[in-house]
Amino acid sequence: MSRIYLDFDGVLANSANECISSAFNVWLAMQSELLEKKIFIELEEKNLIFDISIANRSLVIPPEHYFCLIQSVYEQIKSSSMFPENIKSLFNKNCKNTSYILLDQFKEYFFKYRELKFNQQSDVEWAEENPATLFTKEFFRMIKSVDVETFIVSRKNYISLDKWLSGSGYKVDGIFGNEELAKFKNCKFKLISNLQNEKPFRKSIFVDDTAFELNFPGWSDINVLTLEAGWGYNNMPDNTNEILEKIRGNLNDLHN
Image (cartoon, rainbow, N blue to C red; front, side):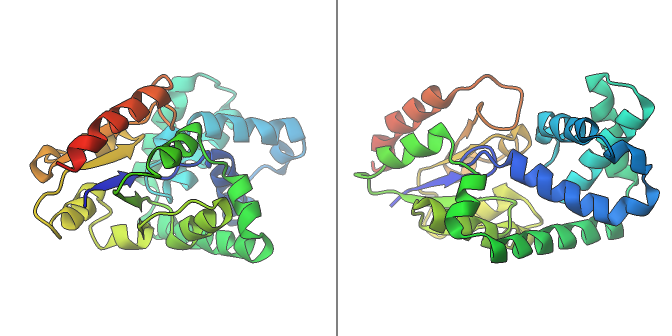
């Protein structure tokens, strides 16, 4: 049996609003002593931080870099420089200069904050806060009658993914979250390569919205077709229908 590997954030679910909201609250709690309080008095200014952060969500790969993104947006607003290219420059600078200790602390608090939300939200409420994409709805309809294994490979932690599946009603054959990725140096290629080796290089598909993940050399060597999701968190046009057609066209090949 062959497999289809799917990213979560941006591919299966529109999770940007929830991610930015959670990350912002954790960042604010960690940095409150450094802030000029007036920036948060006006709701409009707080919403501006949210809007700019969501627009630049594609910059974030590991979850700890949400800290760098929101810090960069804050610095941009402080300087009154609203040029989009400045965000990427500030983001790269903060990723480079922020200590690993602080980023690890943010990541720990970020996941703990989410766990608190889990205790307050039902599975359905969590799924509603991270609504399924059009791709997800059509994809699971398409594979109902197909004998193929489906796996989530994501930088989100396991509990977030499992709760979403429970609340949304979608079924997969395996979940590989942030905890599993850590065993493979946070590299999706290495994790999937290990799974592919369970049986000699089965024909498979991997859908992600991050070029960084898909450009890793060696995918063809492990018999995996990579597809970039334009409806996710990148600057591509929405290619939902195109990707669905490519998957549909390859499903027969996956069983040959």
